Structures are given as structure tokens and as C-alpha cells.
Image (tube, rainbow, N blue to C red):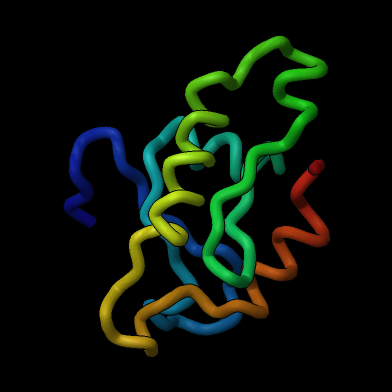
Length: 100
């Protein structure tokens, strides 16, 4: 896959081979997503865990990004609904992996 430098595409959950099962994230955010320190909610908001700040005294850039995305109304989404991440999958990540 020819991703732009610093970006990585990955499958949220391997339920089926469909574009709506993927997100395109910067490599650092991808790692934090896998570790549960960030998530994307079913309403397409980017959230950063308080634990990043509390346990590691880190994450300022991610909290600023969270605020910018909130003010913008959510993450950038493909125009076609069928190409957007499935809200059910995002809900699973937010409830099961995110360490809030």
C-alpha cells in the first residue's frame, strides 16, 4: 500500500474486507490507538486518554489535536457513507480498548 510518509493504514477489526473497516492515521497515533491511549468514537470524534497525561506526563500535542478536531466537528471522513469507519467497530474500540 502506497501510504504517505508518516501515515499508516490499518484494519480496526478484521470482520470483512471493506473500506469502512479502516482508518488512516499517523504512525504515532496508530501506536497510541493500538495501546488504547486514543480512540475515535462512533460519532467520529478523536479522544485522548487522561492516563497519557497522568501516568506518563505526556501527550500535550495529542490533547491539542483532540481540541482542534472537536472544534472542526470530528475527524476527516470520506464523502461516501459506505467508505466511512463503521460506528459499531468504533464503539467496540472505545468501550473495549480505550483506557479513558
